Image (cartoon, rainbow, N blue to C red; front, side, top):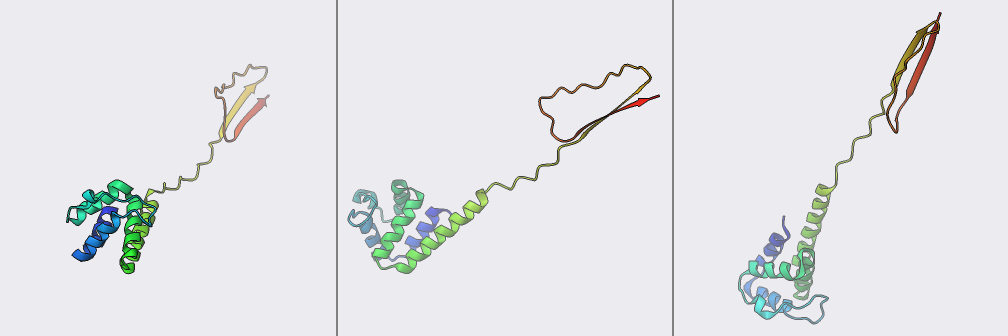
Length: 146
């Protein structure tokens, strides 16, 4: 669930009087680590407009922190805990979904086998390898046949 939807759901649970008090706290700078939202930004009676301003001014995560703090000041501790828990759970879920899948175990390097046979006083033209590095086993068998 998106943070904006969580915040809106929380604000929709407040009555009109409590929602007005919530907006008033947002406009007060005292006692918070967050800057106050200008009153003119909070004039809309619509809860979704308040959510938009919270996220616009503070950012997604801090908007939740501000809402939780204001709800606690209003003694709406149950709503504050519920919002914080929902946000924390959604962050954990998002983190799990963003984890990269474990990479498969590397397959063992292939082994390379050559067999060279010569008869008598023959000249042997062996295959040449053109590589800066070879991983795995490299085996040469040279058999002199009578």
